[in-house]
Amino acid sequence: MIASSGGTAAIIAACTIGGGIAIFLLFMTFQLTRILESVKTTIDEVREEVVPLLSEVKTTVTDVNKELERVDGVLDSVGKITKTVERVTELVEQAVSGPIVKITAAAAGVAKAFRKVRGGGD
Image 1: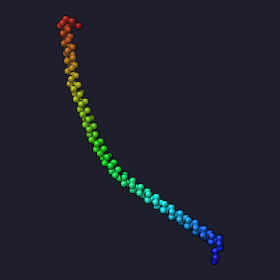
Image 2: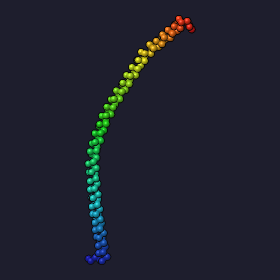
Image 3: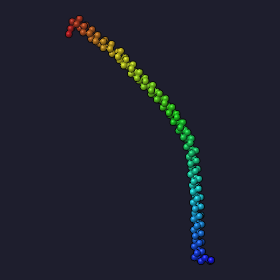
Image 4: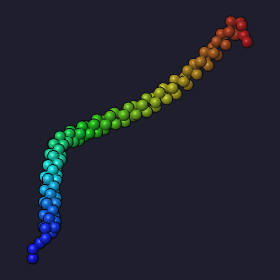
């Protein structure tokens, strides 16, 4: 069986198209491989830079937390001192205001008596 020239041309065209597609796919596979290698290299470089940074961030956060705990302790102490000062102030006010009122009343009484003795009377 001998193929006609039209059939032979179709077979040659099909082989040429198939070969072209195969070459195109090989080229695309090669390009994709290069892109993936580039992405892998970039990821590796980023990882090399990020891991030490994360370690530094962890250390910094730990240090900041320690300082915040210390400041929290200081603020608690300041709050306690403030309450103590308020109580002392109230006690001093109570201790001093009563005698001051009595002294003022006594002074007013003495002044009134002095005016009476002097002859000015109310």
